[in-house]
Amino acid sequence: MAARTLEDMASKGYTKATAKDDYIKSAWEKAKERCISNYAKLPFGPTRKANHAKAVRAATHRTDWEKWKTNWIEKMKL
Image 1 (tube, rainbow, N blue to C red):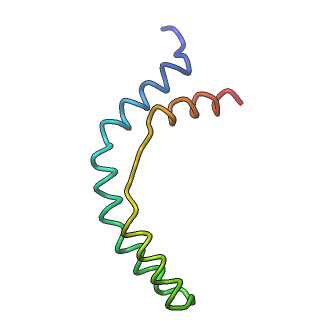
Image 2 (image 1 turned 180 degrees about the vertical axis):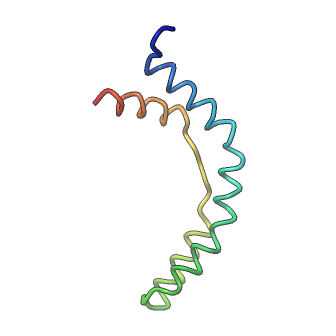
């Protein structure tokens, strides 16, 4: 059996990640309110907490799996 290349391994990871992309986005959306609730427990003032909550609610999840693949290959070469 021939040794796998970094490109082969990155392609496998890419395939797995893109297959899970919808789940990842869904889980991220569901975690937003928990993130806001946990941040609200911190000793920051009401303005900072309100700004945080507004920013989290407005944020959208994005994935760039091509970038991930490129960066993963470069990281593994170190």
